[in-house]
Image (cartoon, rainbow, N blue to C red; front, top):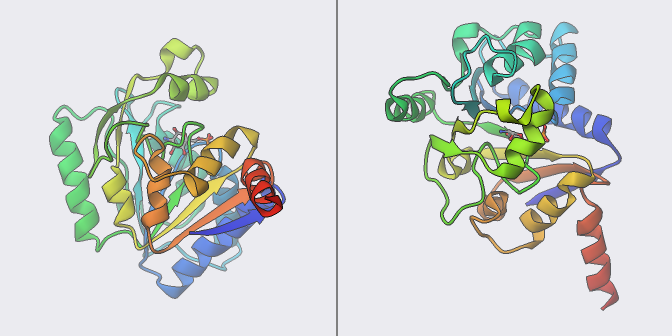
Length: 251
Ligand code: GLP
C-alpha cells in the first residue's frame, strides 16, 4: 500500500487526475471504476479541464460506478447517476453507452447485481478503481459488517452513513435506507486502486485502514492485501496516522 500525503484537497485532486490521465494515455480503452461523494469532485473537474485542453480523451474509455441509492431514479438530483453526469460525463468526451451505473429502481435486484458483475467481466475487468472512504471506513457502500461481500449486492446503510450523507438531502429521513453496491470482492479484482481521502473526519478511518487489522468492521482495511493500491490523502486525513508513526518512532 503506497500512502502519499499531500498538503490539501486541491493537491490531492490534481494528483489523482494525473494518475487517471496517465492510465488513460497508457491504455486509451481503459476500464475505469468511478466513485461519487464530494471527495472526487475536484479530480473530475481536473479531468474535465485536461479533456477540454485536448490532453486526454475518454472516447474509448469504459466506466463502471461503485454504487447507487435504492429507490432513486437516474433523474433524481441526489442519484449517483445524476451526480456523474453533472460532475464528469457531461464535461468529457466519454460515450454515454460506455458508462455504467447500477439501477436504483431495478425490480429484480439480484438480476441487476449479477448482470453488473458480468458486464464488468465482459469489459475485461477494471484497470483502475477510484475510491473515496466513509467516516466509518466503508468503501463504495460496503458498510462495517461481519464478512466481506464478494460481489455486487444490496446493502442497508449505516446510521452514520445516512447522517454523513444527509447534507445532500433536505432532511435526514430523505436519505435512502438502502443502496446497491459493488462488493469488496468486485473492488479487489480491480488491477489497481486509487483511494482519496481529505479532511479531519476521515483521519480515524485512514488510520484504521492503513495501520489497523484487516477486518470487515473496517471495510477499507482489506486494501492492505491488494498488490497495487495508492492512497492519496491530505495532511488532515493523515493526522492520526502521523501521530501514531511519531509515537512509534519515539518509543
Ligand atoms: C458515499 C459513497 C462512497 C464515498 C463516501 C464518502 O457513502 N457511497 O463511495 O466514498 O460517500 O463521501 P465523501 O467523499 O462525500 O466524504
